[in-house]
Image 1 (tube, rainbow, N blue to C red):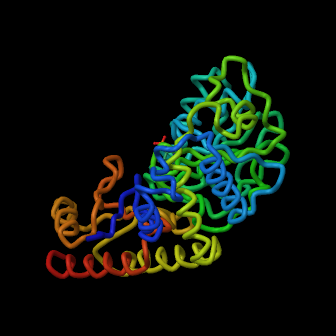
Image 2: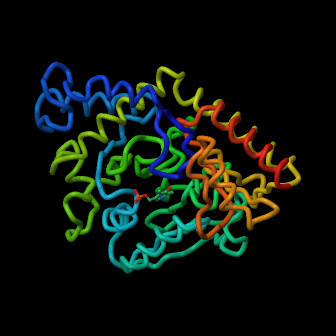
Length: 360
Ligand SMILES: *Cc1c(COP(=O)(O)O)cnc(C)c1O
């Protein structure tokens, strides 16, 4: 029995991709082995990784002058790896702070000894807003501008791509990648932990413009050195083979579902339905400014917060799981990534309606 899993991550994956993996789990491509048991340097797996990369390039429209890396250490590893790869001693880096993930990336940049300029700090709104477009100016001498397009905890998402001129734009897309088409050429570097929209945890995808390769500090660990990893096709050491394989299955599902334009349509319909219901309920509320609401993570509060535990427990019994809010925000949070169908959101709305009728 499958539930509707609203976890923020590791998150629900498309059933089609899981079933495709299951059907060949014990005997992959007639090898008599699972994909987890074959050499990462053998022809079959090297082809699998190349196909996964090609599909990602096709779906996201990644230009030729960008390198795709399959790394480990999660998005958190990149908080430290990005300063090592893209800066020198004495550099300044610009940040937009819109939530707890931005804040962690800022902390790592400071730890690397960089001068960090926070051009916009939304902590004052308790992370319920994004800075207005054009309200900040990027330092032309900054090594990069870093931002978090979607803040997974606060449920806050940018409605625009920040203008950074010639300064490379660096984006933590962990919880929004593949949710809609984007113009990759606007970015210097995109990174994303896989466990929200791309597959199992343990894989981190980095998409980096080639002119940013080769600048790493000598102390950079090789497994996080973009140029070294690029030169070895992300196989300097044993890569997360199962994660790369399953990403391929998920990308196949995305493609067969109509690609990123279809994902965008599906995700906007889900978000519209849920926010529309919350706003009109007279019982539930979403704390985020309307122009900054996330398509992927929807935190919501109820008028009787003492019933939060009851809500989460009863929802779980009804097959709607992992709805507890992040401890810093309280209430509930529904993460509705690509794999969550509109029917799952509708089931949640039906449950919320019934819960309000009984308790409101
Ligand atoms: C989940 C998440 C992270 C952390 O990812 P790990 O793979 O656990 O390091 C970082 N940034 C954002 C936006 C996230 O959603």
